[in-house]
Image (cartoon, rainbow, N blue to C red; front, side, top):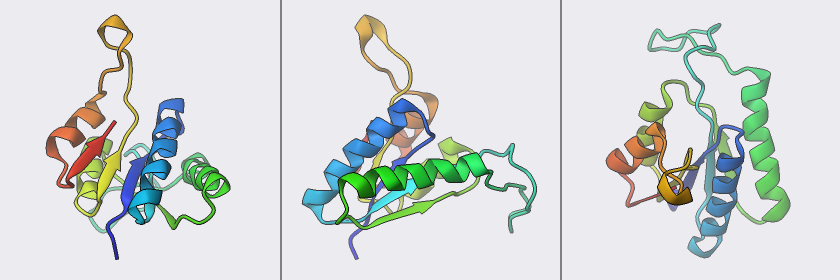
Amino acid sequence: MTDPITVGVDGSGRSLRALVRAAHEVKPRRCPLRIVHVLPPLHSHATTGEGHAWEASDWDESVTTEATAIVRETHPDLEVTSALPAGAPAAVSPAEAEHAHTIVLGAQGMGGFGRPFLGSVASRVVGHAACPRSRT
């Protein structure tokens, strides 16, 4: 199986634009799309095997459900999976990139002269991603 193009979503407009871009990247490469929403450490009810406490809230689950629905509505023939890994986004995203063809994240904020600049998560992923391509 071909490694997926992985896209990080957080429900923001920027992450949804990244989702659309990732869906367009998948088709010509004939690979699956993996939608990832990272659960922050603040969601604490169930304990993972690593001793950290996280549990997906209804909102967290709706982020991946909505992202999956958007992709399936516009690209019904694509193979789409989703995941809700737990941890710090800047640590989980590079780990997700180890098994990805490409990782796509939305940029955050605006740099000088109206250009977008990378947020801390995107900057870390671009600098540390194991996959051959990282896009923002």
